[in-house]
Image (tube, rainbow, N blue to C red; front, side, top):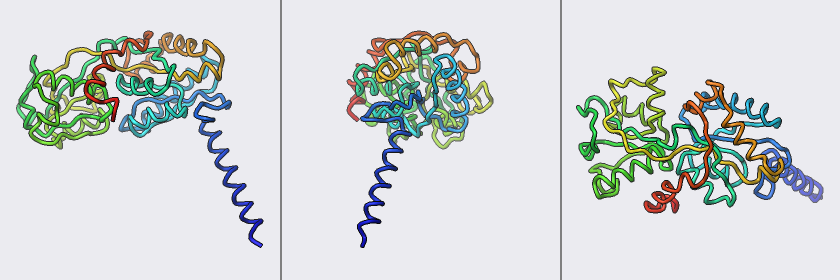
Length: 300
């Protein structure tokens, strides 16, 4: 009496699961034959604005590569890595650390491009004007007793490298050195706004995000003051999933690399806050990998 409905329900459930897997572009852990190049980027607090910017990137890649490209937003740094590892996205604009994490999980994944600014990237340590702190050429040890926020726990410029420089300057890891528990805002732009408002007295973020927010009028540099610039390090990169060459044929990843390097449209470059795209390779981020291993960032 009940066999028919039960069998029908099981059939519909199986059909829905199959359809969902196909739509996700994921078959046996690899992008499917739907041949949609799905790509993503590290999260921004304003996902609507980010999606609009990268829609134009998708249009550009679709035209240059003669395929269908689609931008997939992610909610946090870990989600971007997970989607890449699972084959849900096949190309990503990663930070240095997330790129290292993704490539460590996916054999054959390649860093293929970076901004011309990225081999010499840096972070800004910032403070609310009420602290009385100003620009310094040396590490600002007075932040020790302030309410301080990093960005995302997985961010290169908002967590990994600042932690490294704090330990280099003080001899202690941040969680041991700060007199108050530090926070994690989750995104560079959020760090800036939290410090500007005084919700946190000090913080650290990507210099590119700070500069672009000031330039666009979204941040008041008189309230949110740069107190220290870190030494240079390598950071952001476009990383490609090896499955792309299996789907589109050998050499397709090289075609993507060329399409990225050939970008001259200022609007596309502005979406990345870069002036030019240049080639990259995994070895360019060896220092980031070494520091991440040293601080235990590849194990959490």
